[in-house]
Length: 287
Image 1 (cartoon, rainbow, N blue to C red):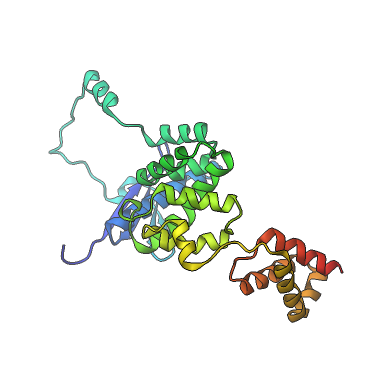
Image 2: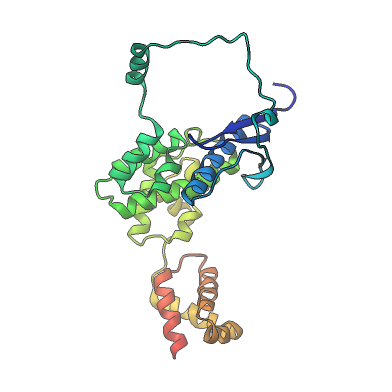
């Protein structure tokens, strides 16, 4: 297709006023804009806000819609009836046949995800916005019988945050990558078993999207969780000596501890066990 695309999309939650999202410049951005607007409107309703009829701008850099102006009447939208379109009467038999042929609807699936995987309403509704993501989630969550509520939640978090973030950056969909549910399942197992930290796991995302397994990535990079307390303690002592100002800040503000832990993580390239690191630094600071 030559030239550029400009789309104005109208969307509303049933029973509430619509928003018109203007100047969307690609089919992929239409999907993203509508997905964002669905979540925005639902969250506003949950907080008790009244949705107004308005025009919004799609910011494709920040991936959000921004209010431009409100519109009070239908006439403001220049809507008018099309006289050549006659009413179509549909009988109940046809409606019933269509209902029976329909797949599981997003709302129904979201409710089932909450029942079967103990997910929150927010998580389940985000998953079903993209059928490919929801299918991926269920295939992975069902693959390991040892998975419980914490793993179901962790699997969802990885999909909705790190994986979806990567897909948005690359402007693609999960079915066009080489990642499989098994890759993500193994990643969560390695974290659960303490073989890698969350920080290390996040650095694996790009390789996993290319089809590499977690074990293969670890073999190539040599990145595993560092749990040697003596070695971690040495790094902790070095960090405390090198950062006297942060140590002073810690006396007044305990949150400064995170800065010290961050320095140890930097020295170990994210491989130091966070829990061990925290305990060792706290012990050294008390001394």
